[in-house]
Image (tube, rainbow, N blue to C red):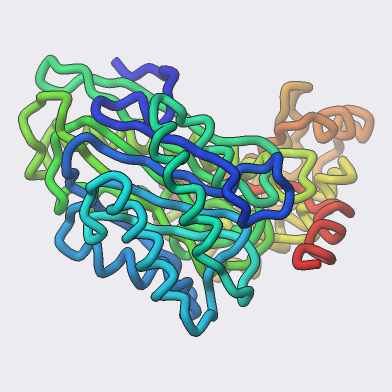
Length: 404
């Protein structure tokens, strides 16, 4: 039985975490350095940004996790360590500091950075803060979640429990990212821990498949970041028989993983920069999974749809327009659209044509904080969901002076 539990990345056996302010960020009340460690060396897997411009931490992490192993994650916020001449050197020094204070080999450390691109990053504040960071390790997932935030307004963590071979297993996660969210992978930093016993190969297979229907279906602003990293560490301490093939246990693990990543998608979209509403677009009746995903993502990506949702304007023509340029092969004369929220349902389009509806009800439905755009293509059995947010004045304000 799958159920949500407390504890975030510290919920699985063998994991500790912490987050502190070390001085990278000028605001002393904002944490800027996080550490997640395992008691044992873990099987590990990662997925990274598809942006050709990549942060130095990704280059270092790719080397460290090439053998499918890791034991710790070190993350700073406030500076992306991207496009810096000494970026790789700084990332390596951060890993060396973790090794110095924890005894964990620098080669077994995942490293990530988030913040302003192209600004020099000094290792000095990190070196000064490492002792306190390590000494404070414990069941502090929330501190780690807070320390990786940039323009996020709330920290994001989750944990679930499930059963394999009669053993309770757990998956926990923390993540950040509310801007530069339109990935071909997962535009964010997300760190997942599990005590399930699963091979590195199956971990990589699981997350590579999962992101296609979860994190790849998330969008805030159609920009792909340079530092996106999804890393998962499996301690194996739950005691189940190790998953080494795509069997029933693997499928159970994947369902738990999808629960975690889907909930994180919702949290990230709802906290999009300047956002006031979470928008979920569900496409059904597609001729293929590719078509369903293309259509759902196109609707979520449309700035005109996003602006209409901000204004609670049932301008359904913008949804049809986004479907039409999605690149998917659809029959416009079969499309239906319904807007749904806690305030009710309002059908606005049937058979590719408008239907009479109450503007008063539509306004009420679209004034809620969570809005579902239900699209029926009437041409098959495949479905997909994408997550996004409305486009507000505050998005421009936040990004107009982000660096200064």
